[in-house]
Length: 113
Length: 112
Image 1: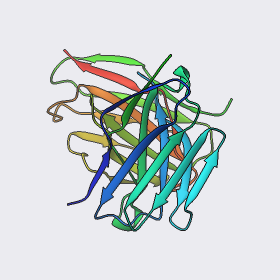
Image 2: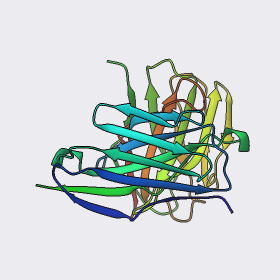
Image 3: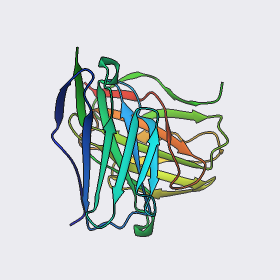
């Protein structure tokens, strides 16, 4: 069956460290993958998109990698800050299956001062 | 300011009643989506529309209905047939299918 998993429901790290979040999928062949940030009670906000032919994408303190062989994306936040605390969602393009995005369950990140 | 607006933010409904959630965007986006989010779960697709007067069912369309009479508007009706309607509902839009999505602030529906 098709599945998207994100590492541990919650992740706690110390301020200043690098947070690494994982998105794994099975039985999909996405053309690209997106990462969103969601704060409590609010809609998700787009962060980064990476295409299947791109290995890595960066934006300020954020870095995303995409390994289509491993069927995995890693999302890194360097020099993390308490303001980075939020839930992070990955989303796959599954247009080939007649739909569009499918979202992972999210990882709740807490950056401790 | 361009954006996507959902209303109301909080909605209470009695069992057996239909209720309509509003979603309006002024981003000139062709594609619009409705998702449902339950605690500890990801977003699940209810309906999506790529163009005016056309829409497709998502994974959990049963008990819901939509219309797309105008490009800017994509209202969602939660009918009495929806067995467990209490949830956080999110509307989104994008320039076309499979580009970044812009989300509204959500409507929290509670059935009382």
